[in-house]
Length: 170
Image (cartoon, rainbow, N blue to C red):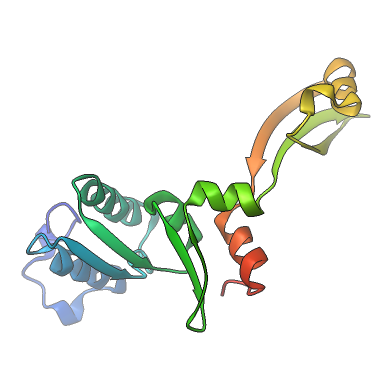
């Protein structure tokens, strides 16, 4: 209870806990007997970013020590951070099982975004990562413009879910 920030509140009646406190308490209850397998449903839903990070850190440590976690969530950021393998299910139908990396390679696109100054304003351009070194437009921007930022990017798990299933996350 101490690690998830509930030790100080241990004498408060559970009925008086906030939603986030109840979520953290349920997580502690799931971990009580150090189970070999955890089934977690929306484990970070209702938590502020700090408490969500604490829970995800504990889950990662548990997994790294050999535990198995089945995570049901619509929060694709949690999926990317916590899952070694992903199964996308919609309305009880399984769409695919794979690793995050393999899903990104199969369904994703990798791009480079360049932001640069032009006529006193910030402008941006997207280029496919494939063949970027030979892209004449990209080379011209690097050579002739005042570069503000260059970022590489890849398709998010949320985008991949939508591509695969045709269903927008709610």
